Length: 67
Image (tube, rainbow, N blue to C red; front, side, top):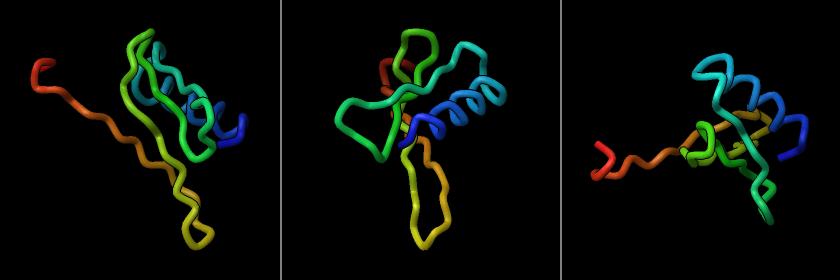
């Protein structure tokens, strides 16, 4: 993902979910970014650019021990 896309996603997550959330580039990956709440890793947001329609998919695993 390009830096401007990550900036837009960062602003979106802050506005919609929580100001403590942040989106950061992933090392060695250009199709996704990492999502954090403060220092805690939450999941990955993936770029889907199929057929010219850009969208983003957020994937977050919830461990049984966290419930």
